[in-house]
Amino acid sequence: MSRDDAFEERKKKHEEKWAHDEALRFKVAARRNKLVGLWAAGELGLRGEEAETYAKAVVVAEFHNPGVDNIFNKLRADFDAAKLAHTDALIRRKIEELFERARDQILNDVKPS
Image (tube, rainbow, N blue to C red; front, side, top):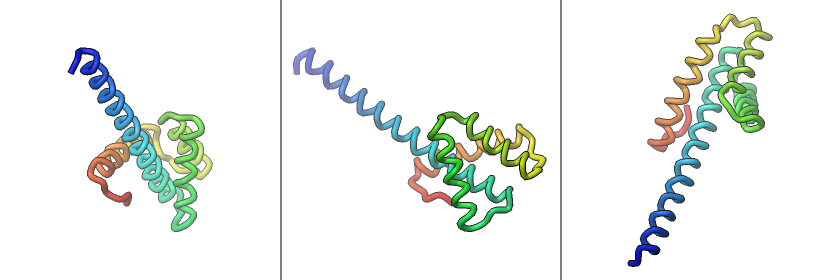
């Protein structure tokens, strides 16, 4: 194998790893958002189909404008509208906790609960 071939092979493997890592990050973020949405729905007293619909709205909110702050802002506004006295720290801690759970579920190929 020539030096150029070896370089191209390393480059290809690096690109494949990057694409795999990006797909994994996307899956974890989407799972986190669904878990956060289901948690928030429960806090808001939503059950069944209403809870699922709310969770989907949280997932979609992050797709339109990516970032954890957008999820936080949605939850903060919804909790305030429902007069739930959840602190910013609690909301952020829950988002982080559910990120960890989502990552573990994706890495271990576990269905969301």
